[in-house]
Length: 188
Image 1 (tube, rainbow, N blue to C red):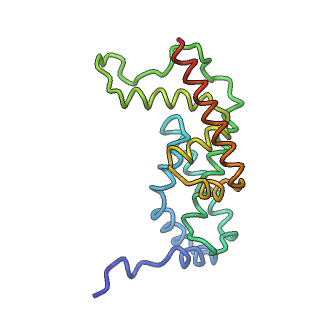
Image 2: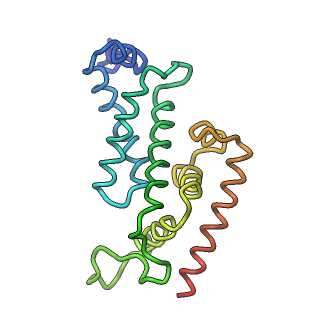
Image 3: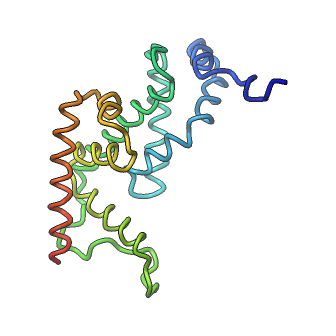
């Protein structure tokens, strides 16, 4: 007896249909992969509005570039590459904003300041977010992919277009930069 999943069209057939003008096929691709895109974009966004903007930009870019999908790897891999590029672009454009907090400010603000007993995990996430905000876009990208998304060096190279050796070097330098930021944070 065939399951409902057996009757679902493959990503590749949906891509072909979308390229032929079937907007419903692209809608199905979005529904199928929006969770993965939102989880990745959440690593790079500062708030829910920015998360929505980045995620929407990913799917707009994917729609515009859909004809470049060569079907030599799973569609999800191609979509993750698009998402990584859009997230990286968002980080680079944010670099030019003037509203960055200087390092000597009060550090991460907790959502509920009246809460006396903060959990260590929550505080660690806040400190990490504070530190990641102070990294260069390339540093944050490589740390996020290698450490938070737990991609391998090879997978990171594939989604960024960098060589594996370049990923290793950038990863090492990014970890050192993160360490320096956290040490300055501890000195306060």
